[in-house]
Length: 154
Image 1 (cartoon, one colour):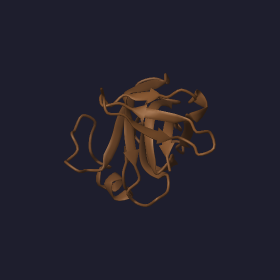
Image 2 (spheres, one colour):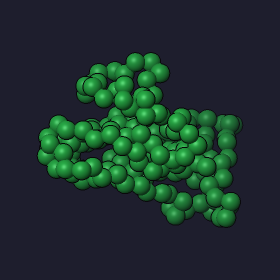
Image 3 (tube, helix red, strand yellow):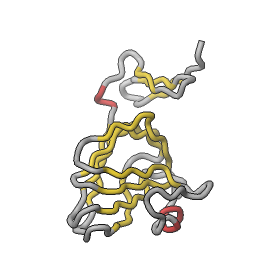
C-alpha cells in the first residue's frame, strides 16, 4: 500500500488532496476545481529578447498545475530574489548550478496552456509571503501576461 499524505486545502471547506508515494496528486472525495487558484503577472512592453524581473503573488508554498502566456516567452520562477538576480544571464539550455534556487524554467512557443506534469512544487525562501521572484523574457516585442494555475499552501 502506498504511503499517503493528506493535506487540508481550506479550514472552511474541509477539502483535501492526497500526495501518493509515486509523487502523484490525488483529489480526495469532496475536493473540487474550486480549490484551484490562478495568478497573473504582466510585463511592461519589452523589446524582443528583453526581460523583466519582478514578483508574482502565488502562495508561500505552491504546486503549479499549468502555465499560459499571452505571447511566446521564457518564464522562470525562483526561491529567492538573490537566486533570480544570479540567474539573469543564464542562457536557454544552460543547466543552472546545484542549489541555484531555480524552481521552473519554461519556454513557451505559442499562447496555448501548458499542462505541467509532473506538477512544479516551489516556495518562497525570502519570507513567509507568496511574493515569488519571476523573470519573463519576451520572444517578440510587446508585453507578456503569464497566467498560473496552482494549489497553494499557507
